[in-house]
Length: 403
Ligand SMILES: [Zn+2]
Image 1 (cartoon, rainbow, N blue to C red):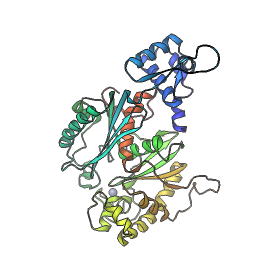
Image 2: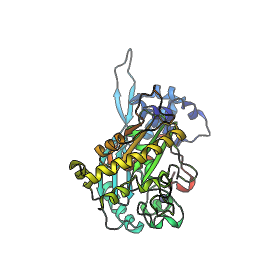
Image 3: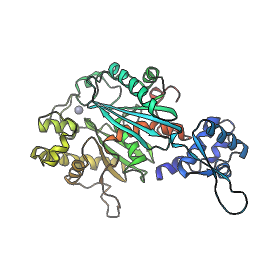
Image 4: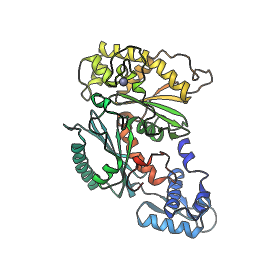
């Protein structure tokens, strides 16, 4: 995976610096095992440029903690074959929660990043204090089932974070969460917490598990209740000064268009979002509703797809002209056939992406499914624990307790 390669390879020399912590060297070893699969002590010493006894110490420590497995000796050429070590999938896990206006999506990942639990709940209240109680009991229940240590918890919310009060009436964002920080969640839940907006988490998820796995530059348009953009630049999330980069929902695309709770008229999100779809349908979108309407080929749904496609065309060209992604991935809380129909309905206009040599389509369907943002949430602490350098640079204010 191209993105992963960038994180780990060629970084071995870092471990030689005595000023770097033991913790860092552990991550270098874990990262090599994650990227390259089972390896022997000698290979690890060469790759990290650490001494063989130093690597042995780290391996002993990781074995004692259950984070790696001793696979025994592998037959390889002459003499006594070396011991091989691998990440232990059951050695640790992470939890991811996507809290959106439609409810809570929960994902549990094992140490290899495999989802072991994915589910959705629809609590009556999404106020922070009610959600916290729910997360506390959910975490207790999940911990009873999950093997190994809990590395941390990722929480994703619809963006933008910490903006002014004019957003209070916005039906696509959660109310009352403005002052909730990773730090306060971490204290309440008793574990390190990472926070991210849903579109960024979706981009991370597509990079790790989905359509952006082979891409260095990708843009992910994410359908929560609103719509947002997550950008991977050189395999890293583009976050901006306060984690709000990619807030495309409130870019005006229709001058003097529909009024928006943000105070403007004609915001993109007023035409292209689940909320806009619900308005077009004249109904609340219960789970499964859009899928049923698609099966019936409901004319209101088809009409919205055609209209949304027209609005997406200039937005896609703008994203391409500004960011030059290898492809724009469309993901989130819409059934895959609806996203495919939406992509087909976009009358693409000229941009820097419209060159004949391109191998990938300009727009493509995300592969991580409706759980994509929650998968990205659970991946935040996983990659913090397993990689020598945080690839998701977060401002200090957004960091969890032990980060
Ligand atoms: Zn707006």
